[in-house]
Image 1 (cartoon, helix red, strand yellow):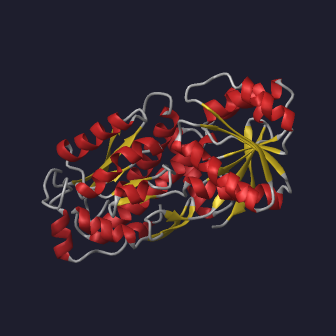
Image 2 (cartoon, helix red, strand yellow):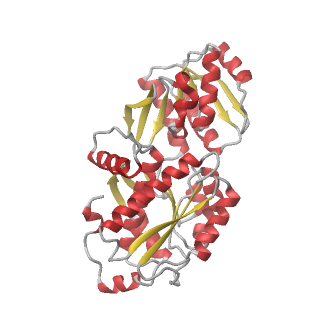
Image 3 (cartoon, rainbow, N blue to C red):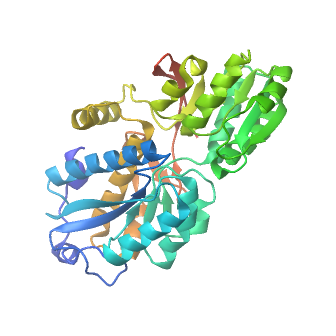
Length: 384
């Protein structure tokens, strides 16, 4: 992190206010005099744990850098994590614990869309600024109100970008979509792709669903095979996509696979193996980018964790960074001050230039990633 993140000393009155520590509301109190506590919610165990662990690592890297640089006006920051296993009820319990027991002044997360939707209204009702680094369901910020922010682009943007890329860059004319009927995330990308692709003159010949936790997709793939589409859109998470891709290739389907940011995991190629080779998906950044912000982040992350940072780690790092900057700008730790500061923030970092639109969702660019064996390469960048 650049030193100018923490440059500039706030007025002494603001510094004194910060000494009150973070709280569950504007009343103050709860943290010790040397630490600003920020809550964090994500799946640290369970099926989606790869996402939660990456988010935790990204936030803790940022925490280390901020504290090594002196903290905020001499106060250390600390991210207090709670595991929600990507479950809405557990996420609610985590929120309550962080606010009532830990007395945090803001919350990073939750990580998944379903969990975030469940908790979002509490952000405004409790006046706790909350920013999800990775939940892409479009209505999250409207459901959550003025205190709910988002550090990534939304599902509909992903579907639009996939359709535009398929028609304009790949020159594809026909498509099939196979999505999870039980996932708002999956359905959101599927619907926006279909609308945009058909508006551009393409034809979606099959628009098929499956149920959550299904593992056999042969019935749907049989219909798709008879269509022989140019592209097959699979807007789900890496663990499901890997299974579908393998079954499709085993059936002799050769269409180009397209997907969303849920594909982003080192597990994708372990599960899908050769079946996902050449597949394309949208992501929030590319770790091999020559941009100086990206290079510095990747180097620091590898040094800390001895592995390549995925998009969830990068989004968490950036979202944590903009939240910390907002707390510094607010000069005090009550929710209203942090919320107002956060709404006005703009920052250029690992995942690009970040600023918030009127719906408090980040406006930013997207990367198109190509699976190349067990590696991933940058195929293109798409601006909003």
